[in-house]
Image (cartoon, rainbow, N blue to C red):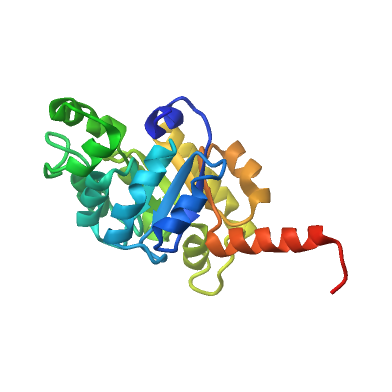
Length: 255
């Protein structure tokens, strides 16, 4: 099921998170049970070349392809879609103006200003009719604005009201830094959980998607109860570390 349909139906999407800019590593990650895979260009090592090269294995595995672009790189949002991405996460969307510029890069006229050139996406998806893609792309490609500062929280309703913004994505680490005025980093900070719940509630009330990065899998059920339906978790270091630790433990011998 395409990512936009999965989320629109109310189903929960679990996204694997990729920071290593190797298509071979992405090939390994797509074998997981997650419904989507996110390529991180902001804090991860992915760049335009690795995003381009990673798309075939993600899409051919039937996973949702998500790209988190660097801060302010709305031009890369359009390129990610041209490369085949289903959704783009834009970090540090802190104002109505940020949201408008992000949406403009993500959507074709009359909704936005996205330039035409999705040749790679058409080929990967086996879409023969460019006209059909033009008519459907705005509703099938998703723009997630990251909410991770107090400015973004204050502008939340304005951001959610922007045509072309399909959802919000909470970055709890940065949110905790903003919440405490730069005093601490704690993505599981109890004091901010009511605010995180409120973000999901307002997104759902606006008929927009609510997404969040999950630092501890034990929090997943709590976020789900808040209304989050796109849950991204981990990275290669955590996946590989957990796998190696588990395998060594299963050997059940003393060193």
